[in-house]
Length: 163
Image (cartoon, rainbow, N blue to C red):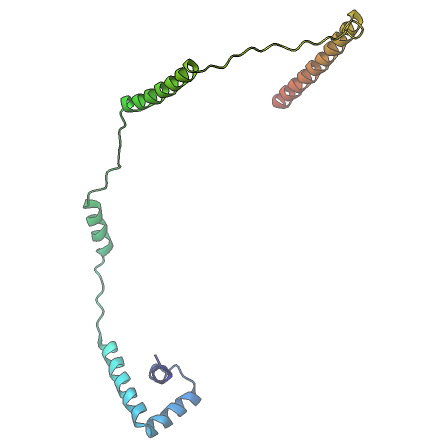
């Protein structure tokens, strides 16, 4: 829409200020083209005012919902997969891998002669009866500390639940 139409519509609707209204009235008296556009808009406004809008009946929404409920509801797609197909595909892959493994072993010519390296450690001066007894004493002490903390947490939790 151009500015002439906007100005004339606001004049016809009565939404313009008195200053704008006087300017539009002066221009209508002077400009013939402006006046013909004004007359055309007046006719359109009269036709719009004479239209009778049809209102839906009071039970329109209920009638529409009843027709929607009569429509067939889509059935959920249920696909059934035969377990035999899954098992046969799995068996094919297992047999293929097993066949490749057997073929690789049968055609292999590598030899596996592996000897463990020998180490000459003189453990006699480091590990003796005294060090084993100290090690066991420390292990027993740590085990008792762990058992004590475990039992304390357990009794603390039961006291919290009981009171």
